[in-house]
Length: 414
Image (cartoon, rainbow, N blue to C red; front, side, top):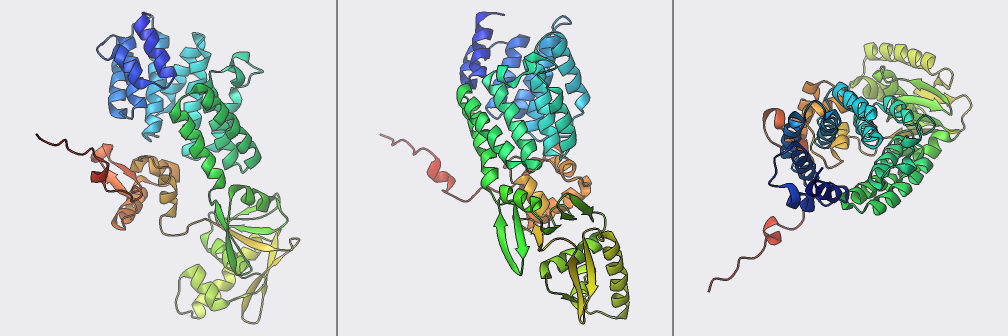
């Protein structure tokens, strides 16, 4: 490896893509193409970066399998940044195995982190934890996060924090983010520091709403963790379950029963009139005898489903929830409840998403995701750019200064 390639690689490791390009911008050999691709990716030119990395991978010879595998890992990270989440994992797994065979444990670990981050984005938390568990220093001391370079250590801790936040382990998430901030400062890469800061903001952002006794208040992630660990009976509208401590009854596949449970939970300790329950569960404006008969059937089903946690008692005008051991009943709801709120929640990360990636993250069909995006676009809540397979969606930028005010003034003409 010549001195220019070495200097460009060091510049990239230090977060200086322009410095790297100054050294290899005019070269077309595979190592230079790979470094140019990574530099373009750091500058946000993802399409150009992907093309350069593919050219580099094709240019490496049969004896340079490790270099080709590094290109595959870099391309996978670009796919993650561009929210191309449907890429098959087999190619990345093969590249990781090649790197491990050639003793490049740092980049092999990075390949695992790329896959874990993809799994977190699409909600596969169990799979992400299994992959992270494979990076066990007891099995291979080279995998010890403390021995990784600062940039790789930052990525590791961000992944740990992401899993901890989704598991509602806020203390562990806070510790991991503090370590990630220290590692990012040691790496001296502004983009990494910004990523850690953005992740830290999630701990202090509204995570849910608490509805109890006819009143509402916003909860942070740590407060949600405390609530779920308390002795209250929680009707969880975020996951569509009813829980009391470790006991959980899922009603995710029974929307009518959950609608009834939520209405009864919001009214506790009072009752809910039959007509109000019919409107809430069946969407009927005017109740008739058929609706009342159906309500009795559904209440019986709800009573059987949540029997370990609570009962449903009939009152003079309707029904009331009766917890068995809990002294309080509360409803945990999403921070914002509106049509297609889940789509807006995914797009809130500020990145541009394809409809296929959104469908994968939401566990819905691509057509369902596209209908939701069209409705949100008509309401001015999302915007798109590109066409066909290159079309991407994101939330509109926050209004601020007019673009013209940010442009340099024209020079006076003598």
